[in-house]
Image (cartoon, rainbow, N blue to C red; front, top):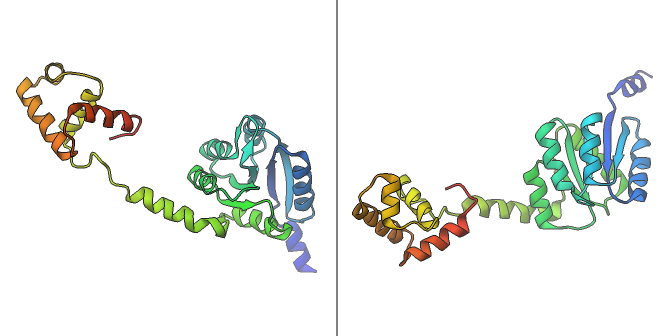
Length: 223
């Protein structure tokens, strides 16, 4: 009976459940509590409740519904993983949503499974992420990886500009004239004009108004 003793001594996986449907939480809790190596240490029905309660109990795994009142499971995942990277987040959702999968992975989720998953598979998924593994729904993983590759391969439209040209482009976006830019950067107006001509050529633009529009589109990104 030595094996039984070893099993009983195994550290329990502490799980926190987040879903706005109480019936779903009860069902998942009942399923996990039948496992000798698992215990449900808390529940929440909203994003706000989850963010308040999870840091208090610090579970091993947080099972998060993607869609929640007052926020989303992805948002909860991002904030929890930022403050408590030791907590593994398993996203549980009714919809095979590529955007949600992408956002969840970017937020640090270790797994993403559909609610239609069999009970034994859900238990296995919890064990996998608790042990540091990664588990994603196989039907969506390929599309997500293609999207990631596409995002990485997307060229920087300003890659050919020098730092000085980028700075001048930014000031064009603020509506400054060549003279004003020159005064700001301590450059001759003619020198600024030459920089503007060069950057427009590199960006394949004909007018500075087009450059201003480009800056507006890129605003918020670091370049």
